[in-house]
Amino acid sequence: MSADVPPLRNVVAMLHVASVARSVAFYAQLGLEVSNTHYEPGGGIDRGDDPVWAWLQSRHGASLMLARADAPVDPAAQAVLFYLYCDDVAAMHAALVAVRAPVGPIAYPFYCPRGEFRLTDPDGYVCMVTHT
Image (cartoon, rainbow, N blue to C red; front, side):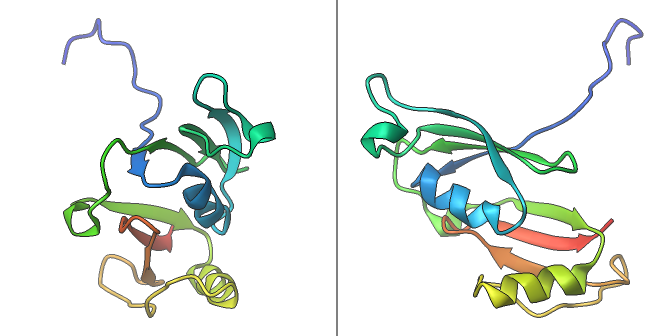
């Protein structure tokens, strides 16, 4: 790699979703809060509109962008896994079960000795929650 390439500081995924507001509510269960939004020209929260884009961020530095999809979102075509890291897998699982989030059982594969579980968002994206 060339020495002239500036350092990469972060990578943030942007998900295309059917409803930005619905996905904001879903990811809020994981501790992500809205940091910024964008609405269609002439629209806005005061009109009850759904944003077309949102930047979500946790208090610990995790970030995610959401953008309203131009076409229907096909859950079967979401060929990506998002790994979400937390300090306590069992506590995160219990908190999500308490709010009736669609979580799977905790599994303990060799690469996650303190466990991981699957969580599927409203558009079919798979989030694997595991330990740091």
